[in-house]
Image (tube, rainbow, N blue to C red; front, top):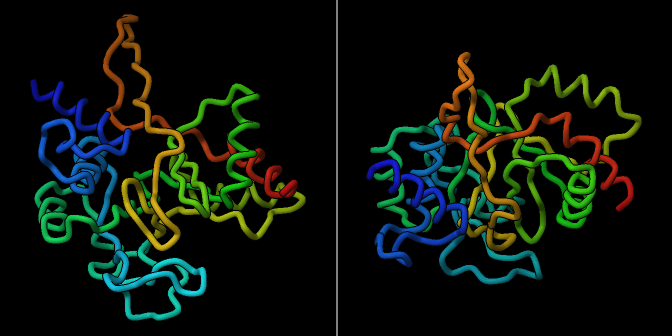
Amino acid sequence: MREILGRRRRLLSRLGLSPSKAGGGRPAHLDAALTCATAWKWPVLPGVGLARDSGGRSGRGRACACPDPECTVPGEHPFDPGLPAATTDERMVRWWWTNRPTAPVVLATGGAAPCAVSVPAIAGARALAALDRAGMRLGPVVATPARWSLLVAPYSLERLGELLYAKDRVPGSLRFHGAGGYLVLPPSEVGAGQVRWERGPSPSSRLRSSGGDLVPGSAAPWLPDVEAVLDALVESLVRV
C-alpha cells in the first residue's frame, strides 16, 4: 500500500494537482517538496516568495518578498534559509512548508541532483520541437511565461566548459544551473508567473539484472545528458 500511495503522490505532483483535490488533504507545495526530497532524493528548500501586497510594477510583474526593491528574479531565489540549507530530510521539509504553505519549491542543482539549462520561452518551444523531430528522449521541462528549463543529468563545470568551447557561438540568453545553482519547480508562483511542467517527470527505465530479469529502476525521473540537448538549444537561440 505504501508503494501505491507513493506512486499516486508523484503522479499528482507531475500533474500540478494538490492531493486535497483527490481526497488526500495535503497542500500542493508540500506534496511537491516531499516528492522531490523523499522519493527522488533531490535537495530542496523554500524560495523567498512574493510580497503579499505587491501588484504589477510597470509591467515587471509582482515584487519579491526579499529586501531588494530591484530584485531581478522576484520570488524565485532562496533567502532565509540560504541555498546551503537545501535538504532531503522529510522532517525539515514538512516543517518549512507547514509554516509557509505556498512558498516556492526551490531545487538546489548540481552535485547528485539534476542540473538544468534554461532559455527564453520562445526558443525553448523551438528547441523542444527540434528535439522531438530528432526522436530525442527528453527529461522534465520546467516552464514559466518567460523561460523554459530542461533538466539534465549532473554535469561538471569542466565538462560544460569543453562543450561550450567547441561552439562557434553561445548566446548570452542561455543560462546554466549547475553546482551551487538553483531552479524553481512547480507548482510555485513567482514574479514571472505560474511555474508548470511543460514536460512532466517520467520514471527511469527499469534495469535488467545479470540474469536478464527486469528489476525496478530508480524512482527519480530520467534525465538526459547535457550534450544531448545543448546543440538544439544553441541553434534555437541563434535563430530567434
